[in-house]
Length: 363
Ligand SMILES: Cc1ncc(COP(=O)(O)O)c(C=O)c1O
Picture 1 (cartoon, protein in one colour):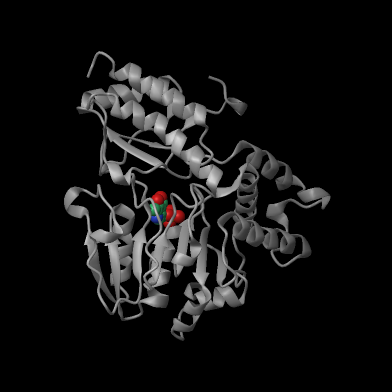
Picture 2 (cartoon, rainbow, N blue to C red):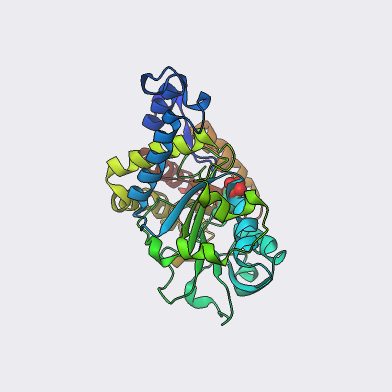
């Protein structure tokens, strides 16, 4: 196997792979942005060059995701984790909200939410070690200010695999590990947020898509850095934003727009994941997927082997064969193959082949 720049098959759950052409363009513009004589990281966020970069980031994001005009696009600091707190400060604010707890990240969102109001666990999949998710599994309350959920649980590899119903509820979604991986309808959500470091670019920046009318619900007196209204009024530049992060995200959006947009990316990801899931399904139970069949993530495939020894052997041999970062999270055990948009299809085919060979004679 030979990848450009001697890169390996990198199954990291995040920060994860970024398309090579994006890295090349970013490298060049790090030194001198489009002949301006100044690198992207070295220019004022309020200067004329960065003004263009910021406008492009907004426009590319809107085009790639098909964002309606009544949504604000924000590139904020603090990662997705800060959003757990920020959204609760802005929209829960002493009231009550429904949360669907389908994995480790949802658990963290619940803990942060509880500090700012009443959290109703409308669905809690903890009892089955988070192997299932579904909108129809929840008991919703009537007075919920919003319903929060994690579309794709990165650690468990459990995905709702579709938008919430258009039922008038204000759905707030953590889309960190699947945004941009398939078509989705922004208008179904009151708010979407996602850390950039899986499908969109470098870490340290969270994308927030916010329906405009929510701004009216924000209480007065929040700390300015945690107030969406302040962020909107200042075009996410109340302070110095992550200029480099938003720039790279813009390149990533353009890359996938040129690839054919969300439809094409979705098909590509289905195929990629299929190479690995079929190796698992054909292993006669040697490999087992953590998620229920209807919730199989196309981005993070969490799977186990029959015992610890075989897992250790599999991880060592796969690494020697060029497959890196396959160790699963300790809460699930086993292995996890994170195959974000930029992870090459050949790597999925190759891992599937390796898994078949490993299982042969053992299952
Ligand atoms: C689904 C999900 N939500 C939130 C986070 C936290 O993101 P951050 O590290 O940017 O705060 C992660 C990180 O892996 C994640 O996978």
